[in-house]
Image (cartoon, rainbow, N blue to C red; front, side):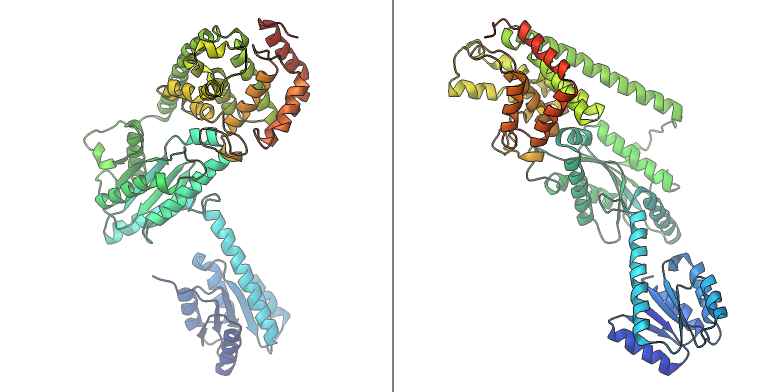
Length: 534
């Protein structure tokens, strides 16, 4: 039943007094509904859900105290601000009113300004309570219904579908490779993707559909009175439109896709809300297994009964899969690292470069108090970032005079060549994104995409400073090394143009925290260089 919410409900047995109150409240721009006795008043309150009730104490049939008691006992009327009006301002009446949950008490005859102030206060309290209620039911980041409230809404819609007929369908959506987005472009851009996804979902569904954030990068769409076929059409429309609707203009290289599982109460295996959710979740998992960026319907699993896994067994398998994945990545890393070492043999001046850069980015991660996941990814990127030098001719690498423009351009393209080598190894997806943007500049004049400021992945900004520091403090065939102080000063000069100013300051802090370790690393690199200093 549709609820026509009003601002104020006036329950007053005296007709002239009732009309006087009506006129005063309408003049103050409040929407008002009137009732002449307690029974009619309760009916009006339950129909209109007023924000404020002004109720006379002495009413025929049901008095004001009983009305207040019933309002406070009804969960649907929670938050209603109740003002009781009495002809006599007795302590007994006031205590009785307050004990049953009345918010304010006025004695007749009352001042019209005082009444208006009480109503305004009631409206303010009601708005505050609504905001608090809404906050408790919604996700703070996206504004969608949260996981807890989703289950309440699903219970209601499932019961309605069972009672009145019709089909209830459910879409479970998960953003693909979302961890790589967070690791590469930072959590703030990850949050922007989540908010844009929420907008896309809200704009794609009908008014009767319910969109909720299920948790992390997972979303749910509840579709009442919707067949499985119609739900699949909606899911495909959401999937196909997501890359365009969730694109961030300043990050053109970021493409967001999703996988969607669809279930329905038409499925004979769905006997409750839990079944509906589990079937959609299984279909989503199948979409992930089949390559992501697709829609799978739960009914496709019919004829393939699955023995319910025990929780301990599920956890054991999860750990086993995670372990195998790590072992696979470690094996790939070892093979590629062997190539890097062979490559460095071509250029004795940079033989320790990858190791030094790895050391420096780890110290920066420590100083910035970033999570271990960023350390691991950055360490891998630092070890691998120069792999593309395999495509640079020896004459350029060994040249002991200033490079020609085309030769300098070839070296600037090393990160892109590295990514082309590593891209077939999907385990290095996040590392490739960091390396790809190593030559971006903080002022937006870098390559390959001219990203600016915080739109450059955090890992790329950190790696750029670590690499620059090592290059400046190491000997090269065409120049001698700088001192640590000179290198830091040069990075500060370029802060805001080439480098992130905050990370340039972080470099100074990291040096102060463990200066001996940094100096020892620089001296070790100098001693290992075949070029005589000075």
